[in-house]
Image (tube, rainbow, N blue to C red; front, side):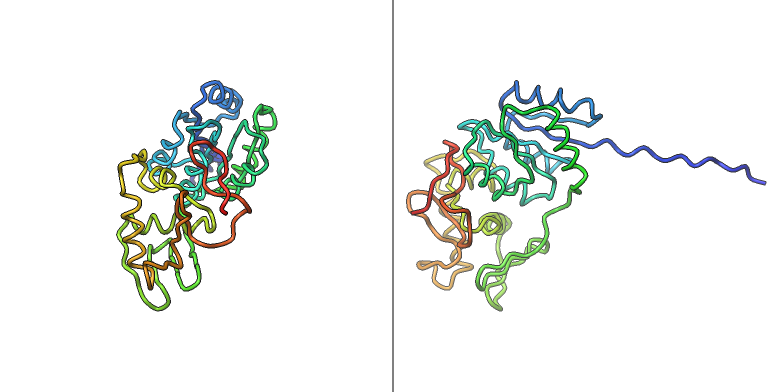
Length: 256
């Protein structure tokens, strides 16, 4: 007769948290506040690195600091949401309510204003971890006759199937996932190409032109990929009033 073996519950895997902040005191505070929770915490000082980290590692939560003129944090937030459904917690020292609203429009799940209370941080992180289950972006986006399948990476205009290169698809999906929000060339360079925008480069403009040639009935009078003169590009749709993608100043630029 076989002896019975007592059942032992396997311990739950430790949750992995990615902290992205260029401000070392903020990174240290977040790390020290969350360390007692037995989390595996990874810290990076570049918001753009968070995009690469999400692509190459599995995380249960991302805390993204969008404070500072060079953070590009809001554009990175939008790109992270395009790549993954991992919960996103934004932190910012700016109390402007327009920025808070903008953060949620870009895909944030929660938002905290500095200075942060460590007890509130722990409670919010715990709630986000209960809610979140990271998975690849999936679903569909429809703008008028334009249809984008994010899972199968397919695009149709009406009944016409449109063949796009990988970068053209990423560019269109990025713009369409935030309808009504104007993205500067710098935003798109960081979020789609993941490189620093150089004024002498026309890679964004060339890619927009090629994209229009494929999806627009008349590329000279586009319906889907539009230009906001002097600012950038956008796909039409509803957005928070007066809000566009964050530029280097981290201030919203209103559409006229």
